[in-house]
Image (cartoon, rainbow, N blue to C red; front, side, top):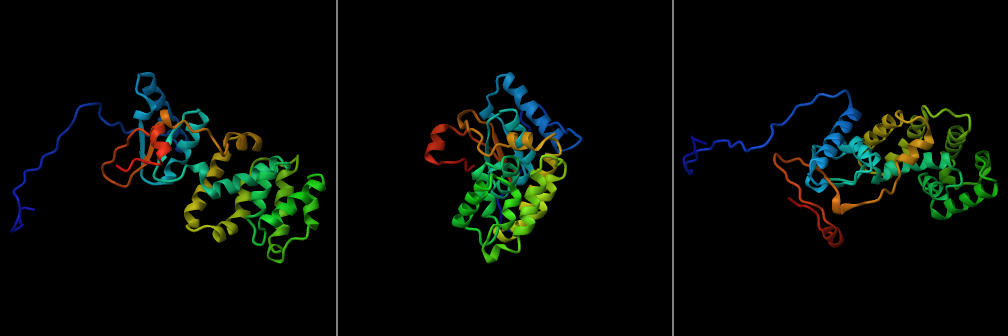
Length: 262
């Protein structure tokens, strides 16, 4: 700057404000980190700091996955800026739908979604397949002989074998998410853009599954439609800028569709 021929003379100096110094905390893993952050959020709330006055900053949208699930598990409402909530991502819903259908064969909504992941299985074909599955008493082997469209035939045997295996009463929970992910990844690349990024979310989901004793507890805890209480929500914000700020997300803003653009 000093070598510039045309300039306004500047004297720059840093200014340190008041308040506590930042703390550098080392933790064992992502789960421990999420637990630590949530404990600090709750501690601040107990000291009178409203939830919507608190914020957690992160660099990339997927860095908040574990924290979001921990907030949900603790029943702490939040609003996320800078990307979809982890459980609202379509590919995460897809994989969870497979597990939900395996856990409850009568879950027609999950089955209808899962069947449409394969090529050739549109809404009409998926509806007919659900009807045939119900007429067969929700028995997975009955799907083996179901007449699927030509575009689906390549994928159908592997799909039925996977569902029959993970839905068996004697099937161990360990490794089920791995098997579902292996079946789903070819569909992921066909259905969505940025497949490598989405694949990272599925790997994160697989790591989270290891913390649950049963499939039922896993799919129950990771509900797909958690209640939103935006009026008192803390903010999770993804920022790629050096300085960022967050504003409270009120019900009035939610109704008007306005979001924090600072």
